[in-house]
Image (cartoon, rainbow, N blue to C red; front, side):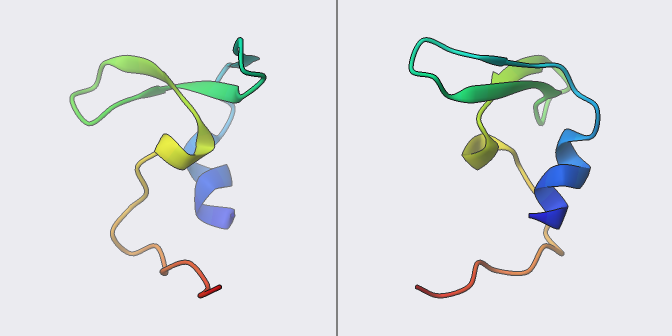
Length: 52
């Protein structure tokens, strides 16, 4: 969660038709895109998710 909050920062956000919250963030090429939390690329140093 900490890595996601850092990645999002103060980026603009909005709710889409499916009621998913999307954040306007630059993608890998620097183009701004509207991304859901599960689509945000995290740094390689981010720990793996806790096993379920």
